[in-house]
Image (cartoon, rainbow, N blue to C red; front, side):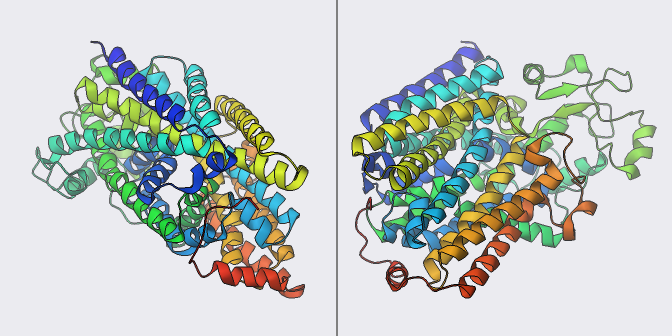
Length: 589
């Protein structure tokens, strides 16, 4: 059986599973559509939340980022996992006690303001729409490679699959589908990693193999990798980071951005009790850790495998000839994610750090005239089985896993958009008298419209996936997270303070990002070059969400202290929410 039909078998079987679960768990009421009936077991919810969180960015991109950046990119691991500690300790149980369906629901009632609810809806839609672009793009990459269709066709296929199980199943259908998707993606991620760890280190546990011995050279794996990249002019893989302030702020931005992501928060409204919300967050962290402890090993081993493929006799020897390149490289060239340009006319593939001025004399001595191979980081995980010459069924499995990761998060984001429009905007602001049947119809129509918008943006992205994902985290960190924290832990913050804080935090973060990445990501519109010497106090645009959050807190408290205190009933409500006991089902009030 050819590789294409093996891929079709794995992907087709996974789709059949998702459709079957969606039909079995289809929503019949608004409660089932928004919070899956409120009776999801904590372990089940933890698994579904892990799938909701581990998007195409985690499955496809993170190991590639680590592979290219080494230790410096460990901030992604620390920030994304640390966010769940914040969720478990500071948000999930209290929001569950409040008993609402959505994040704008909480903000609107806690700050007794339709304006606060509306600002929260706008922030939520901005976060989810920008985030979902990366998921649709990731699905397009996976489909285009493994099902041999165009990137555009892959995005349309992904949209059709999500439409079938998300529009009709709502949160109930999405929850149980995401459980299946988690199983698919974690198996798909770990099995190739085990094979590769065995090949390179003889240890079947990738996380242990990362700190083990490289079988061929007898050196510690990381020491071997440091030597290889150093011989090619790159910084040591384990090198420390100079700008500690930026590293801390970036980690913090990812942490509070994670804790403020609405499609993750709404998952904690689906469990029966307050204690279950905390347990769900704990189980989510366990399930995420299975992938996140493996990702550093996947990144390091993929980097070493790639360089060994280009320089089979070592970096100081000749590179392989282009016409002798392996089949996996030829296949990925068709996607446009790998490209080669023969800059010195020797028909060999040179890959090195041509931006390193100190390495230029060495490159000239070797006859190199610039790095010739361009490899997109997003292919590292998907191409890893082929680079390591693993069996065809492993490649089919990784195809199903990559697609599952993109679809699971896309569904959660689209549901968050749908519930914000139908429940928070239409029912609570525009038409409070709408019937349950009418609200369900509005929810499904808004989700269908959101899928169309996400598909169009995936086909015509406003910037690179990393840019728009960073924007999503920045918005969540600078707008919703502070409002949620102050809503739970401060009786003094009032509606005027909350609205002012969210607006100023959101706008300051957007402006800072657009100054360096281009206004609305339009090429050529950036006011400053996105380089460390131009950053304010050395703070990267990707790290500014933490600063935006600080601004939000400061403005909210300043405005609140200068205006009247919240009504006594609201202060009593905050006191009640801070005692996470005795919560009933999620309510629609």
